[in-house]
Amino acid sequence: MSSTQMAQLMDGTGLAGRIAAETATRAAEISQRTGVTPCLATVLVGEDPASVTYVRMKRNRCAKAGIHSRHIALPAVTTTAELVGTLSDLSKDPEVHGILLQHPVGPHIDERTAFEAIAPEKDVDGVTMHSFAAMSFGLPGFQSCTPGGILRLLDDYDVELAGKYAVVVGRSAILGKPVGMLLLARDTTVTYCHSRTANLPAIVRDADVVVAAVGRPRLISGEDIKPGAVVIDAGYNPGNVGDVDFDTARTRARLITPVPGGVGPMTIAVLLSQTVDAAAHQLGVPGR
Ligand code: NAP
Image 1 (tube, rainbow, N blue to C red):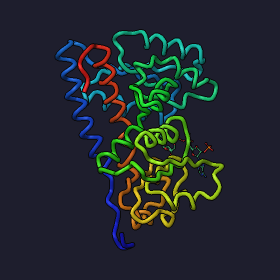
Image 2 (cartoon, rainbow, N blue to C red):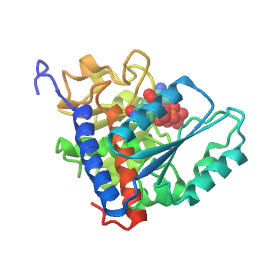
Image 3 (cartoon, rainbow, N blue to C red):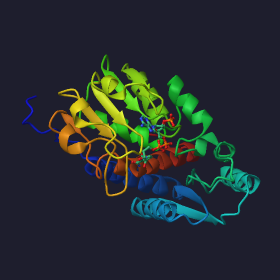
Image 4 (cartoon, rainbow, N blue to C red):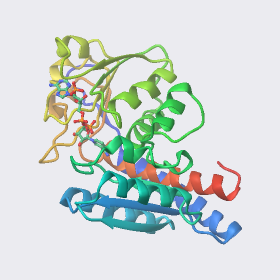
């Protein structure tokens, strides 16, 4: 690709809309067949404004897709044991098919212990060790939503992954690590980079697929994108800025996700889709 050509934008908003429509159809079918509406429980600890907004968005999307949502707002002073109690109760509640614990939950709570109180069959956000292990072993289970969304976006643009070299920048449990595992399962050769990686630019320069999952504005220079590479920018920084220097990167990449409108919308789409999968499974309705 010559330097004057611009990369094609990967339209996460459009794909998320199609997944949401398909999810709504499946939710309606389940309701008709069983008389039960799929239900996602959202659990929020405290009143962090960003978390309040995220949960509200998720519940609004549920409503649009014909998924019932039950919201549990807990005070900021909630202890780990109390949160575990709430999540265990929801895990046993037959009216709840999926559980979302909005994170971060606050420094006084042991987040891992809380996540592990979510029953694997209701872990539609893909945050438990069970889900991560199942995903890594290639067994049935729920994917972490953002990584799952990234793979769907790559597939929607027919990106060849087998035999390609992917560099994942970031190794968080909800994003970097699982997206690397999903790429590995597709026969991509994967390198993880993180805050202690020496000479990040040199590693990125070799990548056929770059996944940026850091949370540092324009950490990855467009000059380091290999011509013709596919660039997935999951980073979201103040001012609608990603982790990749978009303006330069798009003159070298073949495909690139915009920020916003790329990876972002995919997360909720996968959450809702997996909630309907969970409901179908629990209600004995044949899956997709
Ligand atoms: P996180 O838990 O803070 O992890 C950030 C990762 O980036 C860590 O692995 C860290 O390395 C690495 N890192 C930090 N500085 C680095 C540097 N200078 N060079 C290379 N790596 C560096 O963040 P996260 O939850 O994964 O989120 C990452 C970004 O994705 C954020 O912008 C977030 O807003 C966004 N995000 C978007 C969605 C969505 O689109 N729906 C969902 C989730 C997250 P260490 O492990 O060594 O500390």
